[in-house]
Length: 218
Image (cartoon, rainbow, N blue to C red):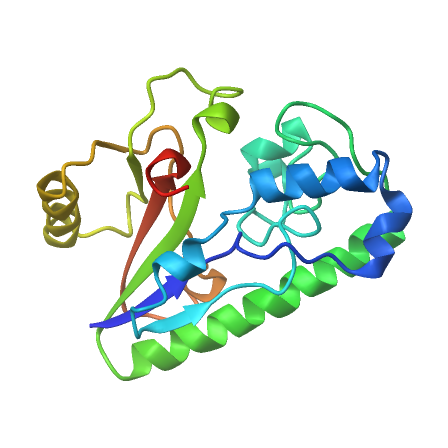
């Protein structure tokens, strides 16, 4: 099978125009940005020679992992849709008008078109595409939305896009390394490219999210 590694939250960069709407001191924003970024995930997976994709900008500018439509995105009620207004602890850190939001959505659409192109290309050459949606999380952030204890590794799966054999291989590897795991807790699901989710192209796609607890590597 072909494998695509998606790392949507590894960047710390924001464009200059972002700062015009910043409502908290820049040094405080930088601390939150460090805390909410999947810091070092790209380093952890650097030796895997599969196709990788990650956005240029921080999730605090544009979260490409969210549903574009806020009505479909559960985190939008906390101010964390595609375009965030609030941080994980409820602090309102950014305000913007519709023009700014349209610019962010334009970037979001461009990124997802690129993701679709890569997925289509990988599916052409094989009948199975495995997407590994690579993240990290912290007990501190998770505890604002969910109840502890939290596992060392959270595995996210989508009902229509997982394979039991592949899932069992991952679980056995985690157990053999001595780590704890939970499925779809505290976070659930895994990214599926729009072209596949909307049924525009066919092919067997398996998408599995790996959320590595920061306490085991930072």
